[in-house]
Amino acid sequence: MSVGTDPEGHPDLAWTAVRSTPLPGSGSLFIKTHPKSQWIWVDMTLNSDPALSRTICVIAKSDPTQVAKCWEIGDYGRAVHFEYNKQGTQVWVSLWGSANTPGQTGEIVVYDDATLEEVARIKDLITPTGKFNLYNTVNDQY
Image (cartoon, rainbow, N blue to C red; front, side, top):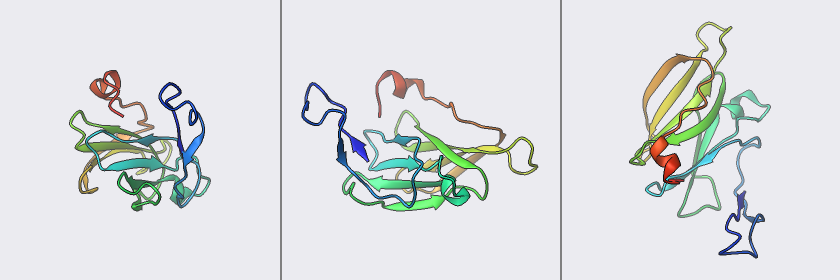
């Protein structure tokens, strides 16, 4: 669901639903895009279904009425928190793991934003949520 967040420019739509995009499940916690990206990335971290909680989806900005693609980023854990690099060419996604389960520690999964292909994994992390690109944060690159 998209919510209008411009109370000065569009007071009639401020803080109301302006669009709904059906996902395979509920429980989204993070949604992210970048001015140079063709995608809107969304998670389902809080979904009670383990497979959906580690699934991420992309929605094309050119047609935000439907999901373009969804996939599981691992075979355990929860997918959460997208962060773009400064150039908007990569998206870093956290995969929460478990410190108590061997072989299931958390990871950061890096994707090429244009192709949606995985380019790297940073392994052996517990709950790698707070990875922030300071440039994007300071310059409101969302």
